[in-house]
Length: 394
Ligand SMILES: *[C@@H]1O[C@H](CO)[C@@H](O)[C@H](O)[C@H]1NC(C)=O
Ligand SMILES: [Zn+2]
Image 1 (cartoon, rainbow, N blue to C red):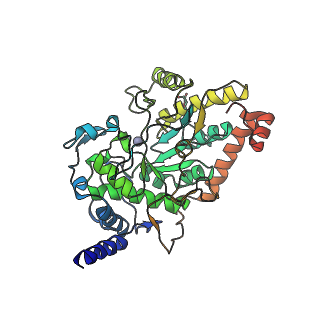
Image 2: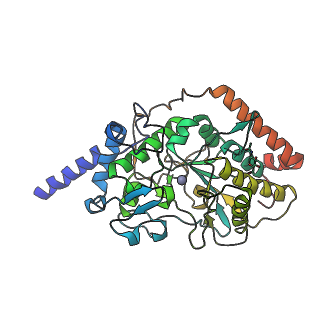
Image 3: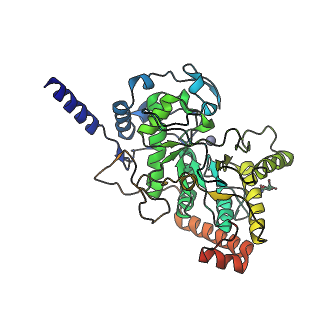
């Protein structure tokens, strides 16, 4: 009798704390800066508090009690509890009852999970996109491949139309937090806020909730793993031993020699090997220009019918998981699986269009630029092959 009542109470507690997917859209977004943590009244939003209640009902208190690491700057942090299981080198490769494993690799031999972090970025010179996310999208179109973009909420708030164009082109939109702080330094509620605000913004721009999450700097511990799992995310790192971090970010001197070194690093991966996930950044001109140099090299191979040993994929494709919480991947596709543990709210909120950018002029310009690149770099045979979905050697 007592036990029945206790179980009933638990069930009611769990039911009332079920997480809403899609998320409720908040009344305002956190500050558009990566210099501050999300604090104060931003943590009181229903979006955050509902998710935080849900986390508390499904994550063991011992895990939530793991101390946050001490923050100095960027990835310079000190782990106070369990350093041996913290950080991207500490790899958790097996699912446990508490959390899903970190993902470092692709399933298939020779699969390359191509990822770009920290964007979207926008650089227009002389009316053309140069060394930015849109310029990367043009090259990916030329190759007929898709990539995964781990976007920051702050960058997406600045460049909503570029995020939409990335989604519409069929690339995978995944989460990389709002403020790009190392997440083990955050309180539990701050981590929930970073994840849920970014999720709500992506949802408001695309109508989709991502499945994949990459922690800034690969910074992760069992507390964060459990919270991310409770919020429905899979933690994606990048190749470690062998390293598949291009080291494009944080270069001391952003000069041509440095750029060549990074490009050479990426080209050294172009051999047959077990499937891997890479790390690059579309955050600013220097890193995006490296991505473009590499992609232009690949476009050259393709146009000359040269063989290439790797299959370029999104993370979702290479781990065989849908990109989004409704089980879909490409825009307009039908759900391929419904493996999420979260519930779908009966009342769905319509996507909120952004008011900060004039969508018409921007989209027209993006389309025009994409058409130019396709027309000039692929040639007629390439365009026909692309239209027919036949891509030899790729
Ligand atoms: C784009 O990047 C390339 C390669 O780093 C550089 O040569 C070029 O000047 C950049 N373009 C602009 C407009 O900055
Ligand atoms: Zn990052």
